[in-house]
Length: 384
Image (cartoon, rainbow, N blue to C red; front, side, top):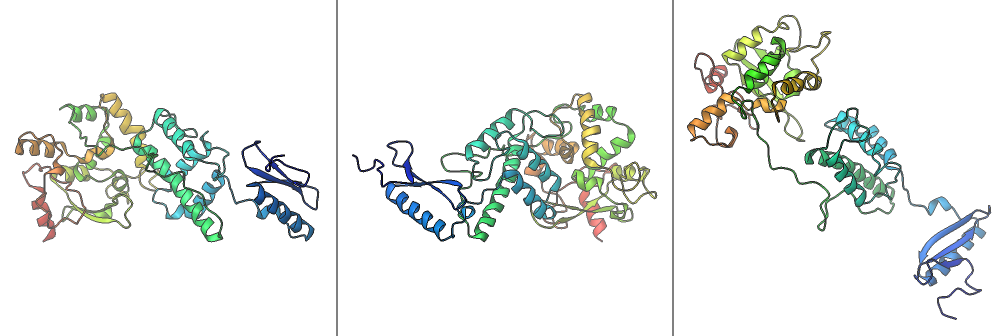
């Protein structure tokens, strides 16, 4: 008889599969419930079997202590949001990503220890080809940056899970949501993107104007003349607008950095004419109030329901609301000054008011006004 073959004395242990060298223990507790454990070598399996029988005889056997803590991904996502929602930069986006991961076929119903890097690679490839399961609106394939944001949310959930394991003194597992030397989980993103109104055709601005009403076009003009992001523009208050000094006191965030960067935006003649004709002036706290007048207009809804359909009707492609900050006339002036260079002006243009502009602020007022004033003159006049 071979040494590794089970004999009459090898009670409570067995090898599976045969000849693999992997041995298991099999025993019943004091209540008659059958338990099986994977151990490894045969000698170690014998010792574990004797230890379990001794624990059962002395009533020191607690089967729940043998199982590692392995909650489901969906439960950890809910717990993560319940504890961290107020500290997240984009809570609504986090809730959207949570819904995607809880409904994804690659991760639905699986525990944290069951998930592997292969599961997240399958999710990445599926999202690049089609919409997310659980999304409220049907969409096409996601861009690399969008997929990376969704993967980053899953990585944050796993990092939070590892922190809990370490605090409880429990054994951890390799992180399946991270780049490794032999394989890259996160998709490669494009180095940058620059698009402005009038880049692909000279009449893009007039075509877009024809598809929007006067009230809607005023919002586009404010974005073009101030360079504010959508959220900062649609939450702008009249208290931030000073007609005497012809400036707008605004704020902006940069990525995930803490705090905000204050901005002082000069008001040129075109922007001044638009602001003076807005019906909300002297009637509302907000520059762009909602229909009920109870708060600011939802910029995301305006972008989705008004701006994007107008772009489609005008036949303008690959233009986003954020692209309105690249002023068409400023770019044309820079191209003439630099020999028709195709680079965007931010790559080689320094504003005249560099000393007065806060660090990190955009050079957003480079378009000349109707009376020939330069933005730097407006800033210097406002600073006196």
